[in-house]
Amino acid sequence: MSHPFRDVAIVAAHNTRQARRLEGHTPFSITLEAALGVLAESRVPVTEVDAIFSKHAAELIYALGIGPVWNSNNPGGIAGLLQAASLVATGLASTVLLADGGAGTYTERASTAPWTRPSNEFVAPFGLYTAAEFALIARTHMDRYGTTSEQLAEVAATIRNNGHVNPDAIYHGRGPYTVADILASRPIADPFHLLDCAMTSEGGCALIVTTHERAADLPGTPVYILGGGLDAIGPAYRHAPSWDLVGRGAGDNADVPNGYVGRRAARRAFATAGLGPADVDVAELYDPFSFEIIRQFEAFGFCGDGEGGDFVTGGRIGPDGEIPITTDGGLMSYSHGGGIVQLSQRVARGVHQLQKSCRTGQVADAKVALCSNGGAGALFTDVVLLGSEQP
Amino acid sequence: MTDLLQAQTAGIPLPVPTPVSEPFWAGCAVGELRYQRCADCDHAEHDPAWACRRCGSRRLDWRVSAGRGVVETHTVVRRPQTPGFAVPYAVVIVGFDEGFRMLTNLVGCSAAEVRTGLPVRVTFRPVDGGDDGDDGDGGERTWLPYVEPRGDENGEIHG
Image (cartoon, rainbow over all chains, first blue to last red; front, side, top):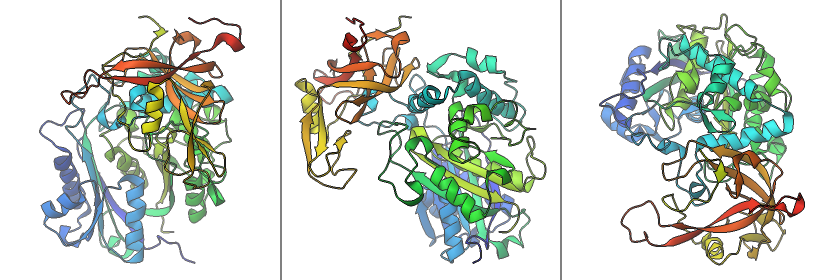
């Protein structure tokens, strides 16, 4: 049987300018900037777009003047990519624009960002927000496996140093950071210090997915979807994020508690691709908090349960290591624009790695990139494997 | 900066009960920690559910917990969710003896005493008003279920 996404290609991934604050922009206007940017870069005429994936899909369809087309409201990031690719693979659409962005919504700086603290009666009264949610997960791992704050800090230092050298990163030039620097930053929610946590910022990101046949006539180097999966165990930030929270379980999720959410998705991604973790050249991992990287390496099968703390040390995940991670600086240093855009930016960086267009942190001869979204603190983790060769 | 963990008293987001959660919050107001037990498969559940997460049954009965449990995981928060929260506060997930878990805050000890495995018991504390302005509920009190250490199992005394 031929590969389900054999005839699907990503032809462009575009980031707008990213900044702590983009004056004058709204969530819609920066999303539109991203959409126009990716259309220009891809050389795809807007009239060829016949499906839009965005939190602002209907508004984009209207603003671009292209209806009637398929309106897929909301799912961005890997969820949007895999669903967009499915539309193209099945012929329900031929060219899909995915665009999202955040701006102008985080104004009350004395509080944590609004998207980190949904009002819910069983978490909000107890002071929950994302750092605390992910800290509860990290603590369980530290208790069970002896994972240390120094190991978490090595992850944070690595990612922040990737951003330090990246001129496009909001925190370009802020480093370099050592493990000691991370540990010396102010405590937020133990075991996390300030520099273990993602930043908040503004910006947009967009992708174009079309057919392999159409891609042949476009200037962008095509990137292929080798496999993927979406793992959710509940709504984010409304229930206690216990490591041991489990569903009723069947098939390939029977042994996956919330602590290893994403394991089923990774198994499916690798099975579809016919690959394993050793085949991955670069891992554009989602980095809301330092510990999440350690957990993802275990969940995705790069190392055994409890071995992630050792796995991330000794330079293995650095730019010259065996498996470079989050090479643009990620949510910690590149950008973190809100609810969705930073999800898409992990995919965009994977695309740029395989197109060999990264200004910094380019992994030489990268042929396979793994991108992830989410985390156990949020009760979901999505995975996609991208490739430079048609599957 | 004191590291004593105290209950919040006002100015924080408060629960807005729904049809399924109302019995839980009504229990808190009368000093009862209520949870649901499935009449068909005996599964104990919290947060309140419309149907059993283990077997799908709609026959969930409200029971009263003895309020005794153990800290399963924890974090001491020093950068609060909103300025209304006094810091530090400790967020914990507690496994109760009846078999359900609840997320809450640990009070009545110092931040340094927070640990996985700490035996705790429920304690209900009043919080004044809401943070939502002029909708008329400003003078009301909500009782939140916190936990505090119980010294009876490890020889410690806690005020």
